[in-house]
Amino acid sequence: MKISGETKSIPFWVILICLATLVFGIAGHALWTADEPREAEIAREMSVVIQNRIMGTDPGIRTDWAVPYLAGKPFVEKPPLYYWLSALMMLTAGRLVGTTVAARAISAICGALTLGVIWLVLREYLGRYRATAAVLILVTTAGFFQAAHWILIDPLLMLLITAAILFLFQGLDRDRPFLVLGAYLAAGLAFLTKGFVAWGLLAIPWSVLLVLYFSNIRRKLFLHLAGILLLIGPGLAWGLAFYFQGGPILWDEWFINNNIGRFTGNTTKSHIRGPFYYLGLLPLLLPWTPLLIGRIFQRDRSRTGEMGSGERGLFKVALGWALGGLILLSLSGTKRTIYLYPLLPGFACLAAFCLDRIPRWVRIVYRIIPIILLAVIIFLSFFTADLSGEGFSIIWKFNPLVLICAVVGIFALFRLKNDLLSRVAVVSGLSYLTVIFAVFPLIDAEKNYEPATRRIAALIPETGMNRVCGWHTDETTRALFSYYTGLTVTDLRDKLHPEKNLGRLADILNGRDSEYDSVMVLLKHRHKFPPEGMPPASYKIIAEEKMGRHRRLMLLAGDGK
Image (cartoon, rainbow, N blue to C red):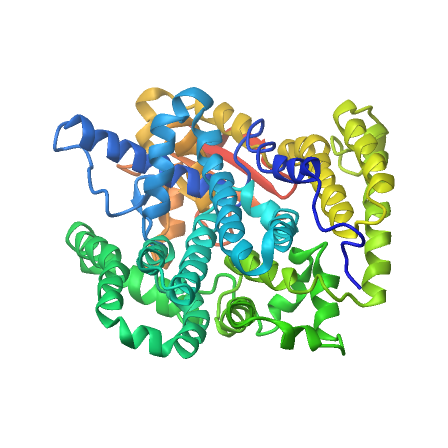
């Protein structure tokens, strides 16, 4: 019993609607917390460095391209490949569409290229129908939609991991040396994107390939030795430049804290989660989670025995990619939702193997899901949420673009009644378009901190721009001010002598500090100012802005300023 029913082809208009989700939504809104301001500002500062090197400007201007910077300070959590690419996009396309859209377009482009790699490889082993199905499954997966619309490193890592795994598999299976070399190069660039984490994600699927094609690898040893040069070359070249430009302290920060420390959870307290954290993130695979669960509990596994050798090899590699990567990330001390993005193509490949024999309960679920999604689309055609007050209410608001999605969805519901795969995919795609047209504006109203940032910066005299420090400001706040206003805010925290912080804060507000005379204070949730234990100080509030529901930003200066 097949999920596709009577048809073995997917209508072109279904494919077009699903792919349209990559185009819409990357423009029309500002940087969203928590990650976009940080990543965009690092890329913007890298674009200045690249421009300085191209123009051959004064050597006094910073040109250390190997070290990423955030708000004027080194930020060495990850290698700089993503920032290089994003910076080049800002310097080229950014002149036409703006730097924010240019940076966000990187994620959409990486998503599109990931889909292309999957289709090119899978069509040789699974045929055009299941290869196209894998593409539709991936592009309509909730996690992929997030990845393709967010300024993040992980979509680039997803592309490079996909290329490194599938190209190596196809190159070994079909004896295509250029694909083998391309896979090694992709793995080397993946390291240049996120360090040793990238090689960790490749370890299990590549180990599966080593077992499956050991004799092939042994026969062409020189090819793989050349591949190893491509594997280690990019990282080695950057590592040497990074060490000489950044020095041993920054090297230890990157290597010890941001590689070993983040895996073990010993040197950082951020994002520490338990071993079963990712089991709660199954919604990232929606709406295709039931399809994968149905395969796990399916009794009839005769299809596996009917596979050809190449198809069986692809299935084993996809299994190692998706589940092996999930196990590895679960062992890591630090965990975040976005860390799963490079595994999503592996799950999409596995889902393509689940299309031949589908349990009855899964088919019932996939008849219900489009109806539920369509009901939500119809509702959002005429109503929206009102978040202007402290509470939450539903108000009337006609949205013609969402209504068009609803009409197309109703058409698909009846036109594709015998094609469950296409029907679920197209209604899911329409749901994402609805989110872009109806929900993104609501999110932007809550997460767009640009107006507040500019209003505060406008109250600082030009001569005082370098005399403002921060108190408990986070990466997001510092990135926003640097990105939108050019104001560099250095946080006032002496990690070696924390007992001096409150005293110096009081000195600044009392006008007794030689370096700063005003303070940017970030208050989250119900925190108050002044902090407990601060010596008496006479100050005034120059500005106070609400930034989201749980953040307030104040600009303070001494009473005499």
